[in-house]
Image (cartoon, rainbow, N blue to C red):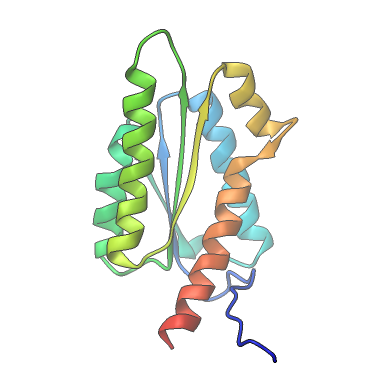
Length: 157
């Protein structure tokens, strides 16, 4: 028996994206942004279909992502940030609230929100994930947003 299968595809033509990028740790987040823009370009998104919104840090992302999703102007929202563990519990609060808040935005609005917020133990790990040894997680988040935007369009049709 064959099963009906639904899957997104990697074509950004005709789609519009918002990228929410944190200024905190901008030496990392600028690299994530470059990766996301590269992915969108490689998959056919014109510059006119991309808006960049800068926020102070990852903590502020959920409120901004919700405001963007509620506008119903974007097929996907890509969130890029970097939270590095320190000596206090601050990391746990910021990383946890960013992840939970962004997931809640996606679930409650139906607009795909790609999580490109690095949560690392060291700056070196963040560098590795922003274009060095471990690829570029900004690129990966943008690819996820493209696929999910296409999948959600199929499911709503």
